[in-house]
Image (cartoon, rainbow, N blue to C red):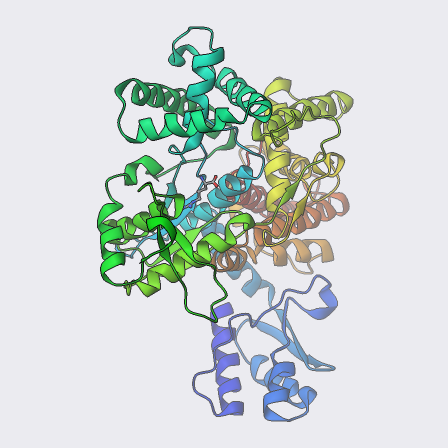
Length: 570
Ligand code: ARG
């Protein structure tokens, strides 16, 4: 249906412009008010500028042609240059089939070159800051969007398991440790040692030199310190497994920074030979960028021969290309690293490599309300503190709503709701902007929030439970004559699901999906509050059950793409 309409619209547009190449990515809008039809387009407004013609005239021509497409009830031009289209009930139902199919994940197109999404990237032996939630949650949501729609996608984590933080920890462990082996420590204890190091180093700056020396020893292969390093990595990884379970994260491929230890030398050699890397002060190796690029030189190797974050990232680009031949590399990393990625990508180009699409899929700073949180001096707000606080607050909310919320597992529900609130709080904002968070908003049952989504879903499931045994009917419900406005709104909202997934994936903006789910919740609740479902008569009843089932399925599928969980009952 949409494809017929799109084909006809493009044919008319090409006739008008005489340009065979016209492609309109976002031809259709879905108006919220039904006076503007089931779908609309403003393409005539844009065309009027290029063609220097009256937009309303163009809209009229378009409306006339589109009105003849099968499944269109009527198409009307509206000033200053819109076309509004109403579909026949049968066409609407047919279109819903597409939504029904899209609820389940598509089969992966395995033959396609993969898309690699760089996400997570936790730093080992350092506290995970709250901004790391972005690379984890936004990254996973983007991966899920690709996977659900059949793309061959690899979610790739690149943990920081190499660097002076290990030297700091080794010094702290030697000086203030309890004598237990590092393996017997919890991550919290290791973090406490790390924090203590920072406190003491403020008074005693020579500790920093000791830490650097200790890390140099690790790099040079000192057996005892290497063993210490391996133990710390193991303890941290065990904690990450727990955390990833809570957040519903799945890493497909993982290579930590240490993996590239041996893979840097050939690249350094290549860069030097090609004259891209040049010798700077004291024998360091740098990449100077052409004037006009506005990029400061990038350090590739320090004068003592040690390598850097950028050196390893460059080696990883090479490794990914050679091993997976990807069509694109997307790095879901916060805005603080914008310069790093500009320099990295430019260096790849200067080396003359044949490159896939490279994108820093950036996200902004995150500001959480800190009032009730204990932030330790010298450390920023930690990721797990935020999650635990959210779960605690969700528990309070559940207790406060004791009469309306039904659950036999309050602590499980608090976890689902609390984690969901934070995740939703992130994914409902445009990742390109700085993000702010407000606990009351995040945990509200009324607004653009996880509890509202979860509650709406549970409400739909509860209706379906009461109609148990009628699933067959609920799947086949046909449009009864004379749809109520709230039915029509719900139906129109539902059929946007496939398009929304596509748009959210292509822009890598998960908030487009989140906002759609919010609209769907509103449309469902309006329908639920105005039309009887179980008490309706035969035809109306099965149609309404069909809408309810599809709404529940779309809410669940969409939520899971966003890494959320929606209980059937609450
Ligand atoms: N570990 C890094 C950090 O916490 C993030 C890694 C991002 N990915 C990359 N390929 N550089 O800052």
